[in-house]
View (cartoon, rainbow, N blue to C red):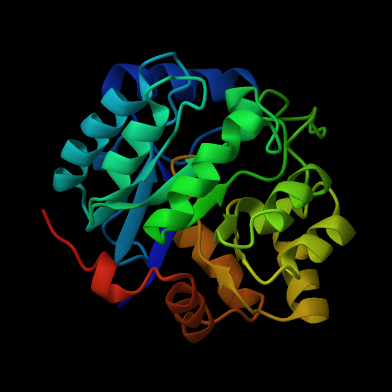
Length: 270
């Protein structure tokens, strides 16, 4: 679909992808795809994918990003990279600034529970500052505990909309793309309040269809972008959910432009 961006995509090197997918299967989740860029379905709805590779190992953030930028050249659809920061790395500010200067970098992916830091922790402040200075968004995980999937879906510290709210509100100079409809599966009301902040946009990655439908019925389709959470989610199936819930391509394209993820930045090729 012309101009449609899948903003929530993960990919890893072959050996890491296999281990990551195995970890999910052990927790009762069957990924739709294999977890490498090459597995992304070119016949899907997205004209562009924005990809991250989560690396919380000390000193691995910048090398992982360099690998990702090289890897997206071979992506089945044109692709950009989210930079996954390492807030505790002394070189983090320098690494973020270098990554964000490139048009191949869409912004920053921030996953507080995965990194083991609260979104309000002082060590995260340079992340907000770097994104604001670059004029690029932060894709922030808000929702379920990454270690409690399957039948044990529970909220984790730093992961819910109530925990994300103070950090987002304290940084109006930064723009936030909040994953999973701002954590709507954890707390619909708190997610709704968080979505009312003027610097907030939302993605729909793996949100249950009934919650998307409830959201659209009660709050409309404003500032909603498409995210598949590939490889766990199937981009084709995830986009079909949005359409069935009354979110059209025009709505998503408007949200993309509002966030600055317009075609001028995202029409890239290998």
